[in-house]
Length: 386
Ligand SMILES: *Cc1c(COP(=O)(O)O)cnc(C)c1O
Image 1 (cartoon, rainbow, N blue to C red):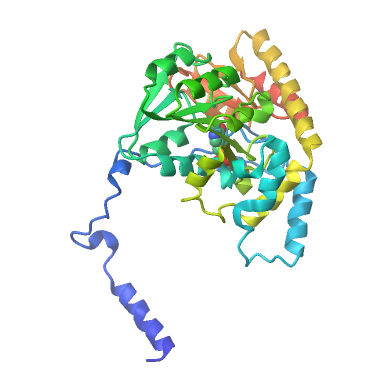
Image 2 (cartoon, rainbow, N blue to C red; image 1 turned 90 degrees about the vertical axis):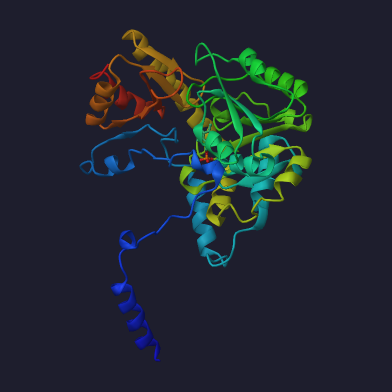
């Protein structure tokens, strides 16, 4: 049979095949038991709504805590140089992101054997769960927290204890200690926390590392650059601590998916059993190295965000609005009529995140913070709503 003939026949048989839903007894393959209780993640993003707005109209995408400006110009230069070089896109990326890991040594103050580059820090969190969690393992997480970690832990069949504080906007070390036991497998901490901005004192983290040597403590520092408070130095001393970070927030590389983790070399060895050395794409690696080479650009943006937060603080205070100006690049605002406020903001091209479903965050929205220029424009619109 000629190949054309074959293709025609194959097409006929597809055309004649009954539609999926008409096949009797067609049963979906069951997902793994640990995944059964999970519901599909419905991502809510303003991207499509913003693209649908009239051309040339200014809108504010403040719903995902991304940087509101392009990364350092060195990033696009480096990507273009990479594309122009002999390293065509058909080749796999540099394995283990070696150049990036080398560049991260001076940024973190740690040597390369402590560092693993990952496909965003989500990938780091998932890798940790896959490597260290078995069915029934105990996990403790103060909530509200970053939900993806909880999904990764749950998908391993872990038993998660969520610790609620009286106020979502205060560190709750006592509550965490009450929930811990000597056989707690993982404690997940986020500092500054998303979505509350609560920063943990590194001394408290250190005390937990000392008191729970059998527990793997994850310190998620996705927003470290904004707070400048870190537990990174503790990694050298405590073999039960992993710090995760990302290029998606302060460095402005969210679309390229680059993150990393830092830990004792014994943990790196454990993770390396599952770690995929080609998990960070080539352009992401090149971009992250370029971003690290331009810390002046990073620091300028951090200063902009700080100044913008002061403008927002004054604005909300002057209107008696209950707003938490966090040490990260977002603010959390509690309003009387959340659906009405969200609608009024969207009508004005301002897209924020509804966080009212989170424990302790009733009637709350979260809004990212950008540059002073952007914030001045934003305030004109906020003034029509608040
Ligand atoms: C945004 C965020 C992440 C994920 O970052 P990626 O590197 O883009 O995967 C992880 N943790 C927290 C707390 C975050 O807010």
